Amino acid sequence: MSWLLVVPCIAALGCQNGATPASGDGKPTTTTGPEAALSASAAPPGSAAAAAPKGPIPNGIGRPDADIAKVVNPKNEAPYEGPKATVRGTVRIKGDAPPATSFKFPAGKCGEASATYGKFFRVGLEGAAADVLVAVTGYKGFVPAREEAAKITIHGCAFARRTMALTFGQRVEVANIDKIESYMPYLDGAPKKAVLVAVPGGAPVKLYPYEPGHYMLRDELPNPFLTADVYVLAYATHAITGLDGQYEIPGVPVGEVRVSAFLPSLDKVVEQRVTLKEGDNTIDLNLEYDATKDDPEVRKKAAAEKRAEAEKKAADEKKAADTPEKK
Image (cartoon, rainbow, N blue to C red; front, side):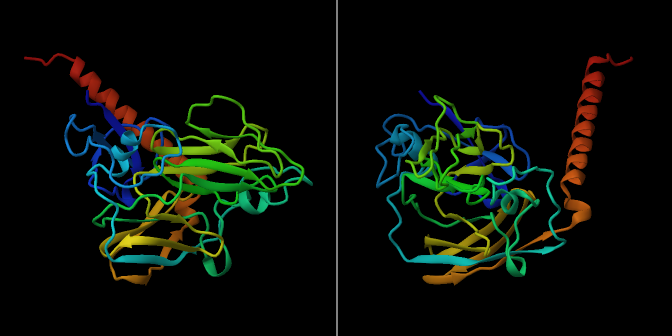
């Protein structure tokens, strides 16, 4: 029996492997911004796509391999073995300085929280943009994820980065490298089976995004600022920038591709279409921040006005439909 799997992805970052856009909200969470949905129906029994997946597809979430393959390798291709490119570069942000957030940080025990969450977004030297999701899409071929888990650490009441990117099938592993403090990380949008504690220096807490989409990594303890956007994508060619703004994505099939950069806090995407050659390829990208347009309060007000306008339009259309025409 066929079923429909709705896979939220970042529309402007592209959807790899021949998936086609479709309307509808993703299962994990309802989100706004440059996130759309792509749908993939299960193939009929006996077809090529319904056969056992070709090649290794890392499975760290315990779902059937075939379910994961339908999303990350719908054409059931063997892993790409042709000429490969490494895409690297620096993402910078130009314009106004980031405004301060309204978070209050506990004194004494949260040394890194203020540096991580005290501003609307993080900027390093010479405008280097941190926490940017960079993706390469549009190539021909299947590139599997390298590991079963995507890893992140907590220290000083802060995650090592404010954005994570996973390939569907990977789990999240959260390691606490503090010496004293414990945390209770969880994925907002994923089923919670138990309260898990990340103790100092202990084994990583394992979290399982069973569907592709957008999640929030949070803490059960009263640290409202302690969050990270988690994007579970249908392809493996992605990376997150550090405070130096740099990224590196190896193993990309050569040829024409799209390289995109997305900063969740700004809800903005920039992209370039390039032709990759075998070996190293340097692609630098620039985002822009205009405080008069991109300030969070301004964006919130604009979003509220847009929703109100849409609701009024829907109400007017309903009223018109319910009103009998005069002859």
